[in-house]
Amino acid sequence: MELSRENRTYRSGNSSKTPPPILRYRVHRAFDEDSYVRNGRTISQCLAGAFGANGVHLKNLTILDFACGPGRVINEFSGFTESCALYGSDIDAEAIAWAQSNLSDVALFSTNTATARTRYASDMFDAIYCVSLFTHLDEQAQDEWLGEMARLLKPNGVFITTTHGCCAMDSCTPRELADLQRDGIVYRVDRKGKFKVDGLPDFYQTTFHAVDYVKKHWGRFLSVVDHIEGGLNGHQDIVVMRKSRVGAGYNPQ
Ligand SMILES: C[S@@+](CC[C@H](N)C(=O)[O-])C[C@H]1O[C@@H](n2cnc3c(N)ncnc32)[C@H](O)[C@@H]1O
Figure 1 (tube, rainbow, N blue to C red):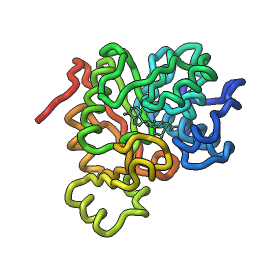
Figure 2 (figure 1 turned 60 degrees about the horizontal axis):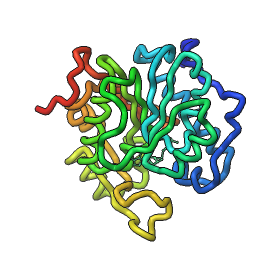
Figure 3 (figure 1 turned 30 degrees about the horizontal axis):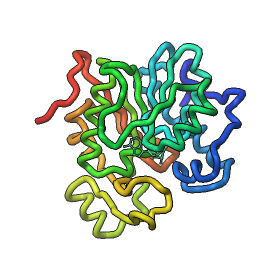
Figure 4 (figure 1 turned 90 degrees about the vertical axis):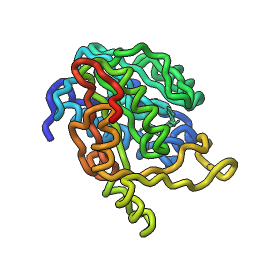
């Protein structure tokens, strides 16, 4: 896909800064630095493409990377800082401390808690993206965070997030696939407590979504305007949502 000039991502001079191995592992499940940087770049290009395809040109916007970790993706958007105000938020205080110390020229970083209410004002952001978070939450937490994303977006603002869809179901058991067909969502609980090697809270597990579930269930919070299967690097799906022009957020049926 040919990107508009505004949406072409490129790395800034300081982008060779990468976080320590454990912080990289938490977001990337690998220790090597090259694949961390490479994936960040590819992801940022996929996001820029999805924004552009949905009429969002990354110029003069206020943008939030929600669940940004140590800034793997937002660092790749550093070329936009002249015209855009970039923000990053994550529950991982260590990752945010690293980003604050090393990427403060790219974005303003802060922590949020597990309670679905951030410190940001209502209607603050033109665009929000959130990579690999809804792929790890249960249904209740997803609903709460979708409500918060709707609150944070300006009317007509765009939210992009990712799901484990059909291109990411190789590990699903026959039982999980049957559950997915019936319920449209599967939340797989694996290791907890001291057996959880990523160091993230126990609620952070693995979730799979069907396209139809996303459209119907998530559509109660924001309009689902695009669903690109395998759109994130051929693996996760990209879901594009838009807040209504009049600013209504949560729209329970
Ligand atoms: C797979 S990582 C992806 C990080 C980043 N989006 C990226 O692509 O590099 C998932 C991130 O979600 C964060 N996270 C988990 N629960 C969260 C929550 N409730 N609010 C904000 N961030 C959360 C984790 O700390 C972790 O940084």
